[in-house]
Length: 94
Image (cartoon, rainbow, N blue to C red; front, side):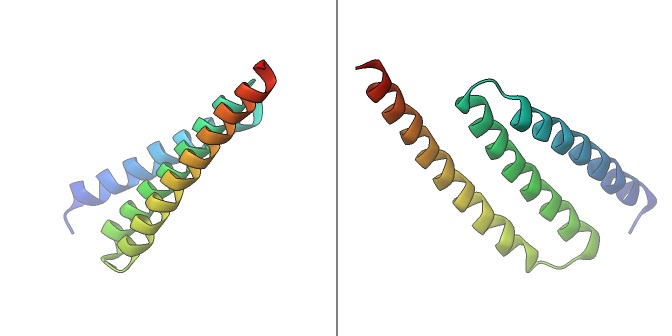
């Protein structure tokens, strides 16, 4: 690979790692359940980004199947948490 591509991959690793740390801080600190759900969803999609970068770095295309599956599971988990939050607000507000 070219030198600039490898440098871009390393830059992406660093950026995703910083994003992951900040998302974990929000997950631990988030004052509301909605903040924690968003942070958990963000962590899932940052993980998908890591898988995509590893795929570019190692040229193993089979890892993209894992990323697609994780994206679908993260989306369904977010929908489930959103329904839980709405249901909790209806029960608590009534």
